[in-house]
Amino acid sequence: ECDWDFVACEGNEVVQLQIEDQYERRSLPSEIGVLTNLKSLELVSILLTGTLPDSWRNLTNLETLDLSLNRIVGSIPTSLFELSALRRLSLEGNQLEGEIDEKVGELSQLQYLNLQRNKLGGKLPSSIGLLYQLDFIHLDDND
Image 1 (cartoon, rainbow, N blue to C red):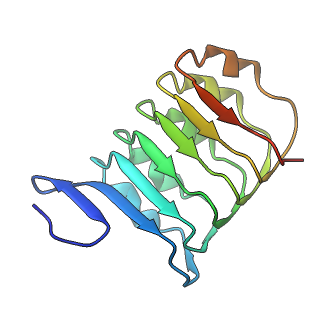
Image 2 (image 1 turned 90 degrees about the vertical axis):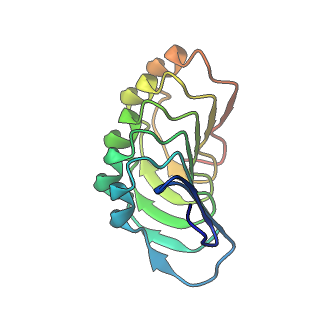
């Protein structure tokens, strides 16, 4: 077992990182992509900057991704929609732009989707209708 603040482990594997309300600007760490057994990644209101790293496509066991209230820019990478175990996705309150890709419909386990307060635009993809588990969706305050 690991004994670190903000980290939970099962055996020798890191399964959760949860950091909130830190006020030191930092970029999104691509190294998190090596934590392939990670189930929950919650980095909320810690002044994260930059774009979502493509290396996070390796987080295939991820069930919760909450990067709310940061300063993340760019578009939502399509690789994020390949995380088939994802149940909860919150990217609220960032500076994300572009459209929500049709691949969002591949998140068949998704129950919670919060993309409000960004700069997203365009039409809502029809594949949203394939998210049969979805109980909560927040898209307001976008372009």
